[in-house]
Length: 343
Image 1 (cartoon, rainbow, N blue to C red):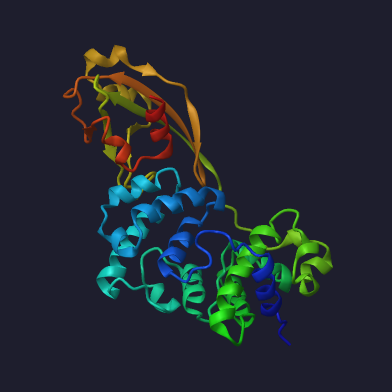
Image 2 (image 1 turned 180 degrees about the vertical axis):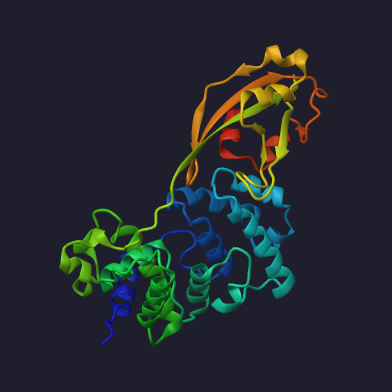
């Protein structure tokens, strides 16, 4: 017999869930979609300011679709995972071009749009349109595997499909327009605030009596996922070239690759390669700045900025000069923007 997870989760979310975030208490698919994309791999506290700035500049999907990608990347700068911003813009363009500026009302069609996977599509469809579809983001996987005692390795695709099936069985059965938004938000809230990865607060959990992992006394064993991505490291030298009036030499990074689509200092694998790009008469003026490490998801970048003051026509490599009042409006990697702001 299937357990009744939905009733206590819906009741708990209404009284104890996160109900004060700016993308909650709304069924506007634009706001829900925007928040879901921003919250991927990013904490709520970080997203709050970005979400507000995006809505101020792009209040609806048509405004976002009409913008230039560079402006979107500029507003996204510092949030990381920049493919999200590129897909965000591409998705907005398709919503306007193919769907008349209205988000599709079901998860199956939402998944056809750029950057919208199965879980994100389900979040938008269930919260905004009351569709009976399950989400399975990181927080929800943790809640469900613990409650169910689901100890199969989620690194195996067949096991993840099995968890999807069980997640669907646990969804509310009636009054979906009211229950689905509460339930979807509720399981996410449980994972974020109660059923945390470390030191879960089981005594505050509305489904503690149903939870296999709690009975076992080992909730932190779940979820099981054995495949670990190996971290790597790379050293890069950054040519920080400026003119006397503050213009900066930047090049748009290729796609795919690190910081794809963003404007960046020219990157080199060695200082010698960087030197070779600078005309010989200016090489003596190259100044090494402090080396620092920038952490990406699966890689540590050891960055070596090398600064030089040049006349505006001194470089012949791909790229261009951007005036002091222009570069702040570009999409820049966070470490490059920080260097330029510190100036």
